[in-house]
Image 1 (tube, rainbow, N blue to C red):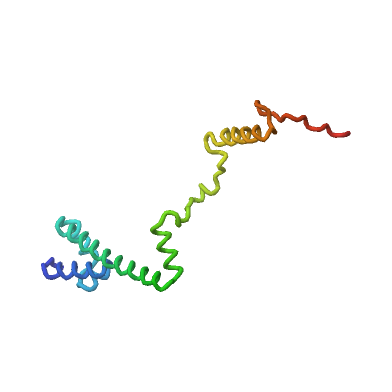
Image 2 (cartoon, rainbow, N blue to C red; image 1 turned 45 degrees about the horizontal axis):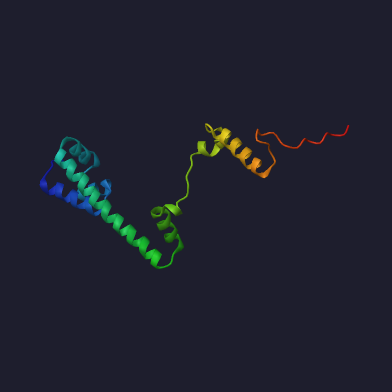
Length: 144
């Protein structure tokens, strides 16, 4: 298809309204291949494409945020949880990879020595260990 000003303008108007390239292509009578070829070949078209897409995403994001705020105003707990978990660090869940979940914290470099040192310090304060670490009391001998 020949690239005319009218077709290009219609495509960008649709892309700003609906930031889905396939939908904008369908409404303006273009194929996705044509649009992406024009984008690759024409740097000005590429800039306008990116701008129109970002404008459309902004519009949809505004509508989505408005819906979330309306849900919060309507005292919907789901919207409230979503807002807090996505906007406030104190409400975010910690996400770990499977490998991190399986990892033994004691295998971290220096971690075992640190824990042993802290245990020794605490037990020494309690009077259970001597200054060098071994127990102050002798274990009772087992009867044969």
